[in-house]
Image (cartoon, rainbow, N blue to C red; front, side, top):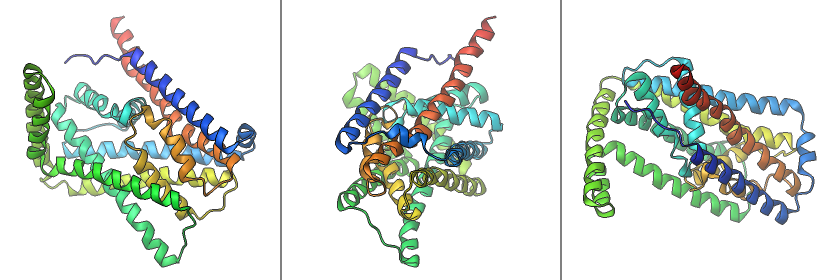
Length: 346
């Protein structure tokens, strides 16, 4: 099997664009909000809140790795915990530096093929199952929030503009998720639709090559679906459970950071807004959703903090949720794709 090449220039370019979009967004937010000395605000946070924030991020990686292990079991693939962590963090790294967060899965599929001899169609199925369970967990939590509101008679205090943004973001996410569900349930028809688009957009020779590859992997994907029907429901429930835990750790992070900055807003209200924020920026066409994420946080969470601490909140959340993954994931990418190659040459 061919070694996958890492384009350092492309990585560097995407990292640069990510930082650039973040800086521009922060500059706009500071200029509009007159954010003041937000660094002083960050330095004044009690260390305990930062320790809890680090712990939540670490737990989310652990739960994501457990999802990988049990998703692999559906196809009778044995993955060690260390391999699952590496697969998770490498996927997170490439998702964080590519538009629409699309770079993670191809590298995870490559590593499954390289280290476990898993054909691409089967690995695509395994990763789609994991993503579908994540989608179901996210929607389940979203639908559970209004139930809590009714039971505990909670009241929203969100501005009208934020409520409109929440509705738009949720509608967009549900649309994309329906497409994923159709790809899973109606694989043949979905593939035929994609192939027709390929034929119209690409030259004949190239379109034939692409469609032949689609056909090959659709066959392997269907084989994976047959595996799923052979009594793998236990694994699905376990993946769903870890998806819930993974999602909850991500949703609790803004709650902890807002408390660190003095916000006393109800935790359920913060979680509800965080859910729709994540859903709305998930498909932004910038590397790691940079720029859109910072501006989105400013819009969605402006009801929870005064202007000056809001800038500090944006920087902290992006560091823990995004840049920390780039730092740790990037170090594993260097180890997997560069240091190992040098050892082999020696």
